[in-house]
Structures are given as C-alpha cells and as structure tokens.
Amino acid sequence: MNFVVITLDTLRYDFVGANGNDWIRTPNLDRFARQAVCFDRAYAGSFPTVPYRTDVFTGRFGRPFHPWAPLAWEAVTLPELMRNAGFVTMLVHDTPHLVNYGFGFDRPFHGWEMIRGQEVDRYRTDKVTRKDLKFDPDKMRFADTFGAQSVRNFFDFAAEEYHCTPRLFQTAARWLERNREHERFFLWIDSFSPHEPWDPPQHYVDLYDPGYEGEVLTFPRYGSVAHLPEHEVRHMRALYAGLVTMTDRWVGYFLDHMDLLGLAEDTVVIIDSDHGTYAGDRLMAGKEAPHYQEICHTVHMMRLPGKEAARTEAIWQPADLMPTVLELAGVDLPADLGVQGVSAAPLLRGEPAPARDIAVTAGAIVQPQPGAGHAAITARDWAFFDYPDPARRQLFDLRNDPGQERNVIDDHRAVAADLHDAFIEFLTKHEANPHLIAYWKGDAAALEAAIAAADTPAYAAFRGGQQRGLGLTPRSFVRSPEFGQGKP
Image 1 (cartoon, helix red, strand yellow):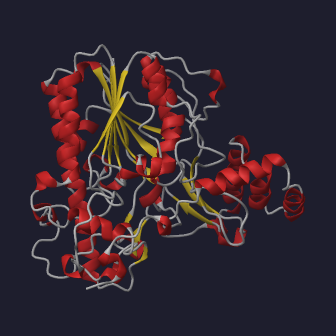
Image 2: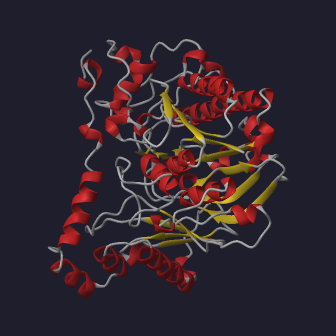
C-alpha cells in the first residue's frame, strides 16, 4: 500500500462545492469527496503554516502548541518512521517555509524537490517598481519584505503554466512515473496555493468577477478591510476563489495521472488544509484572531482502496494524522514519542474509536502577557472564544447560528464554563507550563508563585526554546531591494 498526502495551504472548508458551496468551481475536489471519507469536523490545531506542519509531522500539539520554529533536530517524524519501515519517501513542495532559513522539513524524507517562486522565497532579484504592482503598496502585507518579493517572483507570469501550482503537480506526477515500480512509497505534496498572493491567471478571476476595473488586491494587509471600497473587497474575494479553482484543476490533473498509471487502486490518498482565511468575510483579510469557522474549520478527506465513501462528524485535528497513517500502514508507533494525536484507523474500519469532545485552535502561547491570549474551542454544537480575561469570552450556538453572528454567552454561562474548563484540561494534558495554566485560570496567587519560581533551570530552558522559536519575525526576513524601500 502506498500513501500520498496533499496539503493545500489556506483552503477553506466552505469554499469546496462538496461541502455545500454553490458558487465556487471545485469539480475535482468534489469528485474526490464522493470517493473518500470526509471529516466534516476537521479543525486546525497549532496555528498557522509551520506550526501546523509540526503537528502533522510529529503527532503532537506541542506545549501546548507549536511555535513558528524549525523542525527540532531530535524530532521523530511521520516520514522518518515510514522511511525506516521500507517506504520510499518524497517531499514535493512549493511552500517556501518548509526549508527557508533551514527549517528542515525536508530532512525526514529520502528526497525532496521545491518549486521556486512562492511568497517569501528569495527566488529573484529582478528590478521591479511600483508600476509593476496592481494596487497601492500601502494596502500590501509586509511591502518592505516578502510582499515585494512576491511581486518580483510573479510579475511576468504571463501564462498559467508558469505559476507554481501547475509546476508543483506536474512535478509530483513525473515523480510517480519514475517511482511507481517501488514496492511502497510515501509522497507528500505541499501546495502553498490557495494561500496569498491571490494572483491566478485572469481567466480564473473572470469566473467570479468579470469586467472588473480597479485595484487588484492580491496581497492584502491582514486585519480590517472596512476602509476599502466595496468593489475592491468583492474582487479580493474573487481572486481567492479563482486561486481555489486553479488549485482544484491541478489537484485533478495529479489524481487523473495516478489513475492513468494504475496506482489509485493501491494508494491511500489524503487531502487536507492547514487553516482557512478571511477573504472579505466580517470585513477582514488574512488570519487574524479571533478564529471564526472561516479560519479554524479545515478540509480533511481520505480515500482508501476498497473503502466506501462516507462523511463523519468525528472531530479531527492535525496531530491525528501521524498515528492514523502509521496504523493504516502497519507501522509500529514507538511508545516513547509522547504522541498526542488519536488514530482514526479504527473509525475508518468501522470499529469503535476514541473520540475527541473538543477541537482547540491557537497560535503558540509562550508566556503570560497582559491582554494576550486567544484560543478557539469547537465542540459538537458550540464554538467558544476563550481568553484569560473572562470579559472577552464569546460563545456561539453552531446549531442555530453556524455563521457565528450572535454571542450567546450571557444565556449559556454554564456551557462557556464547561468549555473553559475543558481548555484548561487540554493545557494540562499537553504539558503547558504552570505559568500558562495559572494565567488562563485567572489564579493570581498561583501565577505569582509560578513567577517566583521562574529562575529554575527547567523554566529557563522552556523560555529559551520558545523565544528562539518565535525569533524569526517577518521583520527579520531579508529586505527586498528597490520596491520595498519605496523607490519609484
């Protein structure tokens, strides 16, 4: 049995036709959903891009969530265990963060190939000026760093074939042709699309906003877009939809190639996403907190040879991928790894399986800081925004208000208290530092006592490791020449 994992960065659950969307064209993902087990309650864990991949590679949420940090040298990973079990392992990706600045996510594989040119990738130094930009750079995210770099990488992509997504899936298809004779393989395809920059070829954009005239906001600043004209926000949403459709087309190309090579009948194929995005929803762009369902609800589908298609309400989180794949592959999971994920293999076999009561989505929570801290907790019927400050907490009834428009915490204080307690239990179970637990409990005495003990070697190591992990901020990326410095 072979395994293929296709990760689509920033693909929203509700932007797929099979999940109820009636205006975006995703025929290939829809076809795959009709062949697969679809997890309709899949949610992001560690957030966003790099922390998510640490979750799926290691089967762990972290302590309690992974920071934006390189893959730990000592980490035992899913591709490494598959490799040691006799699978030929390969990474094909255009997500630059996997290897940029030595992040090391290529290390566990026998081989890897990167398609150059996405976002922060220092692919080109060609001279570009503001006239090469389709919108006011003051509206651009990180214009002085990788915003400008993305313009430089893409500005002369005249045809679809030059874009990274077609090249990525064509490269993966060629790898299948050359490697299909291996007894077993494990192929990880990591697609940065439909992450911004939202710059698909015009024929995709015309599907959703034909005849548009105005600024083309391909790389918007994260946060509120309430100050932008309505037509710009509408077109920004169309750009994202167009990139979703282009990504769908090339996922279909790859799946068709698998069929052509006769591999589909002996290969488990998994398609998932790491998180969603705001694309004008709530007059927001990007991935800012709070994490509504547009952000934390993700795609997760698994096609298994001989397994009938189905949809499940079982809650899924990224850390569950590692133990699930290993069990399906018949590879032993070392008992000393401290894996926090839950295998869904029994569920896929129709057997009783451990069930999650909640899903938790959050960025790395390093240490108590006044006013800081947000976690999105999703239960079967409820979505809860937790904060250390009780006054900021919000509760939504997903049964009657799936769009999360009405905060009903005043009417359901007991539900909110139970979900907050469940989050505290999650922190404790996932090895959170005592400082953090005391902070979220609002226990001032316990927090003061924990701080008084903060000079212990264990805490010093914790702080040092976390601070190193968070040290690579966007401002520390290499500045892009000319354009980023505001020259004409």
